[in-house]
Length: 334
Image (cartoon, rainbow, N blue to C red; front, top):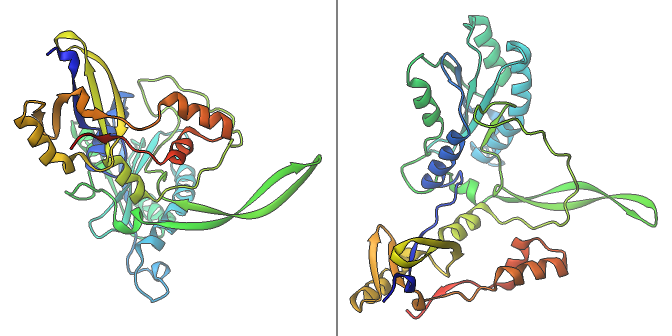
């Protein structure tokens, strides 16, 4: 048979902050934008004191969730006070990390090459005020690249880089909205579901990257629709079921590819792929990567133009329209 009759199925690793492979892909994208030389920059680590009474839950037990929420709100104020202390004209970036015990901490790289006095170090610790601070200088060697990679290391050796309490977090908050009815503006408070599915893990100052031109921020516009967010654990589960399917021209030359979501993870189909390999319909070509006949792969998900049509008719975003269908691609027959 021709190579046009076969496709490659392999796991799809989207850049994200919650899996080991996803963090690696994220870091590659950031490095491709062009990083400054971190030589003689200051590498600041901000931790949370587990014995702080502000981090106790209702049962008087140390709560990593409560400490993270307090630390998250403190970061903006800390950066403001740090710029007042060191000057406003330096570049910076910060990265959120989790320790193995599930407690959060932040790594901060600051373009401040002058030596910090002892009083400056005490002031930085006082400004943070939630735990220990550690300030180091990045040596003028290849240590700057190691420092950047260290800030992007996974929280653990396992697949997931976030603790369970973070992945399963779901809450509600009261927000104020405004709308116009009969040329009269009205306001009211509504309950908004929140999760950590789209939380910020990494942030930079303006003109931090060296390989791209500075792009002016677009003016904010009100959202056209509102999607009830998934919990992060649900997003991670859905991402684990995504695979990339690659089609070929003659001679195994790349033709096109698509990312689809299966009913279950690709590893769950190991026995089926073994059976297909025995009858000559498939062949393993790498770790969790297989080449199989295109007739063995059937996609029951509605096509993109149907999704877009639903979105237009119902004023939904494509993701919400897709969720409306509740259909998933499946490998068939297995």
